[in-house]
Image (cartoon, rainbow, N blue to C red; front, top):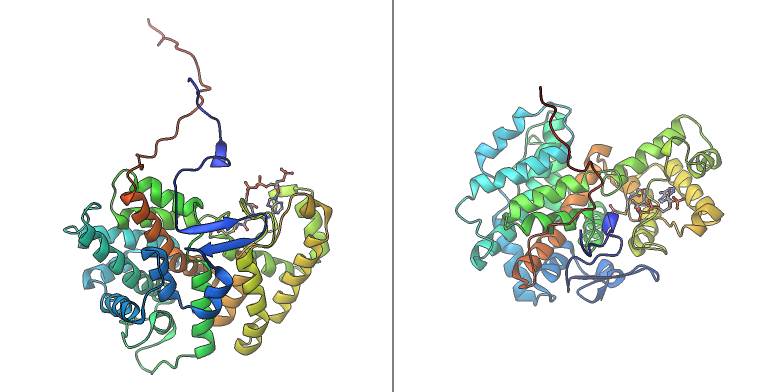
Length: 389
Ligand code: CMC
């Protein structure tokens, strides 16, 4: 096989030069286009951060207004796509429903899928940003058996999504500003994270010149797994189990450390961060305040904090440099907002969307991009012959 490097999980392989996101895992630093995540969380909005990630600079007020207006104008989805949701079972998980719906967008916009036509890439960018929250809310409504609400474009990005999820046609939906702001910040914290599993998937699929909808749909499926975006749902399942079965956090930790049954402390550990995940720090600071205002489950927050405290003082976790990641506290906040566990990873997907788009565009514009095609070390049989006679 010549000089092929063996690197399972791409621990040491850079697949791209990227100017989008910087992570220093040893020091717990995360920057979008050079701006520290802490400053963006404090001062920016999700839609402004989306612009920053995709176009490389913070927008001027006029640019932001233009961008925001274009996104708002495209929030509706084709009526035929609405009927598509009826084909799924009632208890369908909304992640595969969302990825299927995003994949289906290629069929509705078949005349503007050329990855090398700048205008078509631009309109696909806007369509994706605008329609994914609508599709996500439809998936949610479908699972509840409630009528789907059309978007209402005088509301901002996050408010519009909340209304489509929690509003009903018979009543006006009153936006809770605390909740809308908190969700906006959480989406922003998820907006990009360089070459993670789903983003690498988006790039890999796109490297074959598949269109942006097809690539992002694949990214949503990669995010679905419990070791990636699905971890936020898995954290809540873990906290529920500990609370309902009355397992002591100490006992649970022992089980994790003994690696019995392969249990992991979900929401802990990260391939790149060998220090506190800076996003988790911001979410944790928020969690107390938000849960108090929204009336969340304090007992579960206490369990989570006890687990964290134990882990950070435990040799097993210290030795392996395992710290809380972004998923550790987010689920508690989503739950307090009224989202069922099934929707947590969908919220992650809405948040990660600008990053996927920014990275797909960077990949397609990069003259160094080649089709992604890993090699292998063949360990199978040598040539042998089909038995005759
Ligand atoms: N609980 C217990 N042990 C762990 C954990 C954990 N959460 N994470 C890693 N370890 C141990 C692992 O068993 C291994 O031990 P040993 O050296 O004795 O074999 C060591 O730490 C290194 O782990 P690894 O699996 O080789 O590390 P990785 O870089 O391949 O995996 C990870 C990173 C995030 C998949 C992993 O830490 C994990 O499974 N965490 C739980 C799931 C989770 O919270 N995922 C969300 C990640 S952040 C947001 C996102 O990407 O969506």
